[in-house]
Length: 476
Image 1 (cartoon, rainbow, N blue to C red):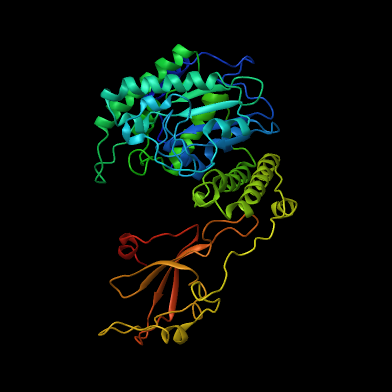
Image 2 (image 1 turned 180 degrees about the horizontal axis):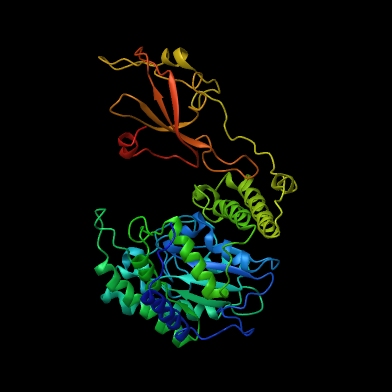
């Protein structure tokens, strides 16, 4: 999808929108470039915020734009955003405190108090310090806007406290981070085609919160990017929807968002015909996958939280070290891709830390059972059904090897068995092939009561923990 020919009023709106950004965004770029930030070679850009920026990991367009604008500069970007995060409230099941900075608790209700979680997952400040943040781009205001006008004063206080705390730090060890605030996008009206709000009430609140962010940025002399106004113009000008549900951008939406954000932050540059764009984007997505499996590692309760002791110390510190080495290798792959080179990742990964062997804590006993695994009829022979019931074998992993570690199953109205399999449980182990969990369909085509056909409905998944009714309705 590409935009229609822009109208005069659309171009005028873009000019006015950019003017608004600059009005509330005093320049912090001493080199005189058109962007707000003069990004130097080797600097590190950290993203914090909620869902708008969290989902950027899934698309990679913003980082691709930044890397193309800074070929040879070895820029490192890390996305620390997560849905529902606010300037001060960022809970994690593997961390004792949900607060992003001292005093943040005064801006939350009793519903956001300490959950009783425990563990050693680093605080936001600890992550930013270890990652040596030079530039921090903060995306807030959307979840907070649900509090409406009544919650605006509290949001202003929380955001102000976040800004004051952040610019008083020296995460890189020598200087305060250059902080930029980014407004939420507008809500897109999809109500004619879906059972969704038309966005009028949502946009009234979002506008209030975006304006409040603008005022605070002006008061604190930091840059502010107004994507609320700009996104409203996008919705008017594009013939196809740019969001999935009114507020979560599509791939095309993130193309626009990433390009606009990079232009505002680091200066406008046409990268659309860059020779190695696809190679850079692929390298960014590869790096994002590994970063995601560090910062948002599934089943982190084992890695950082209440299930870490007593056995976690035997392997998880070593696995984290290795995946961070692998992520750093993929930063280099991005830089090489910008020069048109495709890095041999397997060869580079082979030089990362070797994971130590981990001894099993399983001890066969009468209570724990034995290591013998029963298949098919052998397993059936050990089962006793309640009166009036019988147990029959429909499928086994001998006939269907993909039926490894099934965790959820459901018959549809055609008699087919949908199964979620999760051989990667509890999560990806650094150095192994990427997970290939699946949703498979097992079918009895000859009516003998046993499956004889498998269809792989989806693969390349990671932790298929459930199957919803939509899978039955949308069967092949």
